Image 1 (spheres, protein in one colour):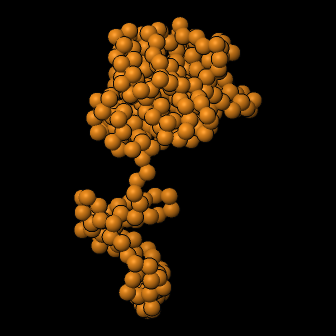
Image 2 (spheres, helix red, strand yellow):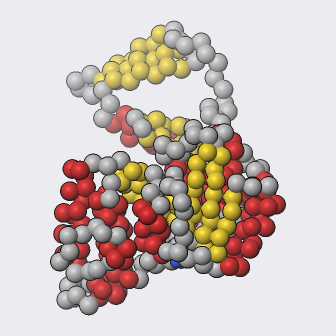
Image 3 (tube, protein in one colour):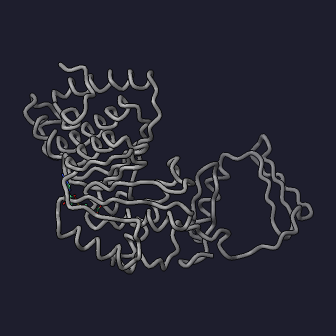
Amino acid sequence: MLKRGSVVKLVDGPRTETIPREEWPARLDALLENARNVHLLAPDGDVHARRSKKGKWLVSRGKASSSAPIAAAHDRTPQRALPQAHPLFAATHISHDKERQVQHYIELLRPLPIWGRERISVVDAGCGKAYMSLALVAYGREVGTRVELVGLDANAQVIEIMRGIANELGYDEARFEATTIDDYESDTPIDLLVSLHACDTATDDAIAAGVRLQAEAIVVAPCCHHELAAQIASNEKDGLLRHGLLLGRQADLVTDALRAAALETLGYRVDVIEFVSAEHTAKNLMLRAVRAPSATRAARARREYDELRDRWGVRPAIERALAVSHGR
Ligand SMILES: C[S@@+](CC[C@H](N)C(=O)[O-])C[C@H]1O[C@@H](n2cnc3c(N)ncnc32)[C@H](O)[C@@H]1O
């Protein structure tokens, strides 16, 4: 029983679907269409059915094989990374929608091999209002890892606001600096660099900063891409490039594919994943990279990088920021 009414939960391998009760009979018919055997375990008795060669169902009934009581409630209380009424949400004034995104963001960063340590250093490049990074601090407190956060932004005003919010939350492990990403230096290697929706090529600056600061993990969600669209636009037009919208989307894909390949050539293993659902924003792609040097992967990635760059005739910012290519 869910808030929106009674549903049937259908589990098929790793996929789970909830189907409204009224849609279930038709769905069940569809499921049975190709079935040959059915075993139904129900509280009032088991049912076994077998379809004969002529397509007739032969049904037999037996005693219930389970006496476990049936509960109508949802069978699993969702495990949120942060409690629902966490003070962070009030302090950062974010909507319920954004709260869900924050919880999901932590889920995406949980698999990184940095949790479980006593302390980790995190740099957020182009932090803006930094609620996602403050959520990492909050999550660190939940799991016993001190997240020493440095938020960087070129906008001094937003940095002032963030200092106030961190102060209000009592997060003495978070500090904020008004600086460009390129100008930031640290004496010691960091554990994680994050950069969410930093504008255009600021994502490349962020990746370069992660490499420069020897980050063990680099997580970026790119924002608007303009640079390669302009370079690709000067190529000879074909059925794809003739249309501005398609050209723009293609340029986004090429930009992020080159970034992923660049990170691989530099010794990172990269997952390209969906950050937030596409219904919230089209800028929903995330590169999640963890340092795991492999000469084979690096060689393959370098070949792919060069091939992709040459095929599209571009010279992306990531290449200017990092020595990733054999050159042309
Ligand atoms: C679209 S906002 C995203 C803010 C935040 N990361 C978020 O996801 O809500 C981009 C931020 O990046 C900052 N930014 C852009 N380029 C930068 C650079 N080169 N160095 C430092 N900050 C930069 C801007 O000032 C802005 O606050």
